[in-house]
Image (tube, rainbow, N blue to C red; front, side, top):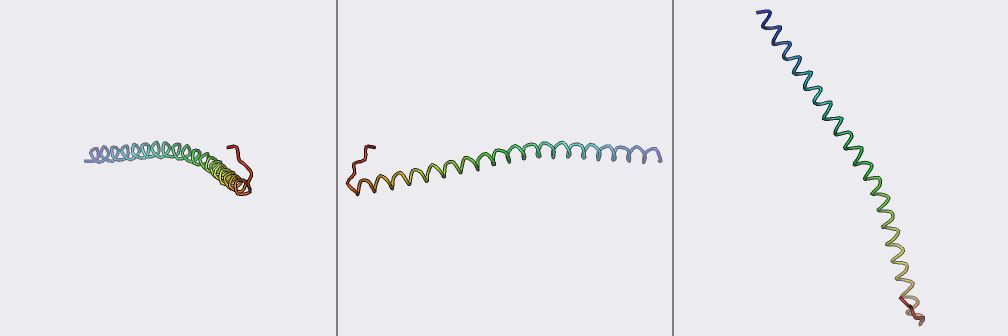
Amino acid sequence: MNTYLTIITTVLVLTQIIRITQNHISLRRQNVLYKKQLGELAELEIRKADFECQRRFYRLAVEKMEREKEGGIKCNA
């Protein structure tokens, strides 16, 4: 009976060790993916700022062209 209990306990301990190892591997992969996606988001913020700057420039350019057109100055665009 003691041998049976020892074998069962050993198997249970081994399965728990395997589960912990699998969880560690899974969490490590998720962490790597998370850091990669976070880096991409940081780059995306820079791109968003660039697009906003371009939109602002476009709006200002259109406003200037409209003012020149209203003032009688021909716009060659």
